[in-house]
Length: 285
Image 1 (tube, rainbow, N blue to C red):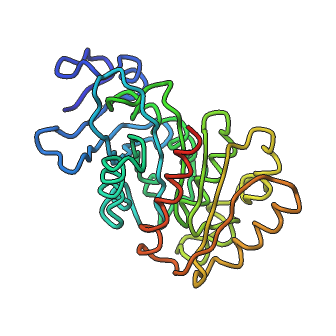
Image 2: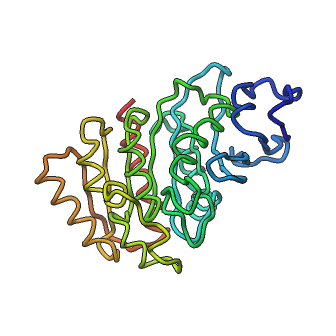
């Protein structure tokens, strides 16, 4: 189904008219062909100056007025909106945990990073705002289309590697929006992006160090930080950076939970330990 901003939606009563004016076009997958609770949304984003994709896991709701928490999951370099679902099966695990009562019903919003280069780092640069794509557009699109997602839905954000950097940085900067944030195997400072991407670091540089370094971000926004946790594998190339961030945060008195587990910078690790973050988010409800 495709909707234009100047059209009144005819096929879907759940598409909010405000959201129609927010995005010029909204494309939603047809429920007849959806599987595993996954839905796909494509919107023309003003911050991307083009189209952006969001993969959504939406559990069944008893009533359209049900208000469910929304968890944004950010992927790492080289990936896209499909990465979390089809590299980790996170939606299948969550569906099972909801069924057994180990997790409350929750919506997973899994957007692309904007598909710039090997990875956008979820930062504003090169005339595009990949940060606001996540912090504004994705939230508006999901709450405008998905049953159970509302303006009043509790919001959480998590991610892996580059997505961990994005989730923790955006979660801190927009702490008034989020009830919790987490990172898995996170890049902790912008220069580490050079370990992964082909593009020059100059493309990503910000005017203020606060936007390039997680510790600086946390210190700047410490009065609005939501509950946070982060973890890293003991064989991960980013382990020393995560340990260093943890130690500096302890010295600064910034509340957080940090954990290490066996594993490396790989999907087997993220598929297992994203559940720890989702249970952490459930505790904040």
